Amino acid sequence: MDGQLWIWIVVAIVVIAVIVAVVVYGRRAKIAANRKRAADLREKAQADAIGAHERNAEAARAAADAARAEKEAERLHREAIDKQNAAERANEASQNRLRRAEELDPDAGRRSEPDGAGDRRDRHDGETWRERDNDGNRRARDEDRGGEDGRRGPRP
Image (cartoon, rainbow, N blue to C red; front, side, top):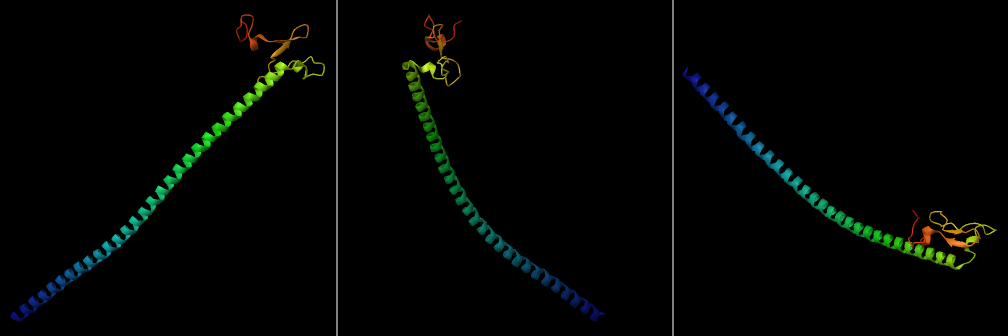
């Protein structure tokens, strides 16, 4: 039995050697796979960093474009307000000239109807601003020039 014991010892040593070799080879393979995965991750991280840098640059360009657009919009808004104010001033000046012309023209109230009996209507609200008394003479309404007491507006 002594020969069989040696055979079992040799078989056990071989089995242990095979197990150790598999474990060592497995660790080396795992280490090599981890190195490869780490290299892939580093490469992807570098690509992501480049992409993030590009996106940051695009965001900065977009922010600059937005700031320029806001300034342009503000400029256009100011320009529109200025033009609106100028138009209002021109309209007011035109209305003042028309009122002055109506005040100076003795036939101003007779233009709307051929017989001259029509009242001039204010262009803004449609109310009569000049009326005629019983003799056909023009007179200002109390609301326009003030009543006997000098106040403007309708009488109480």
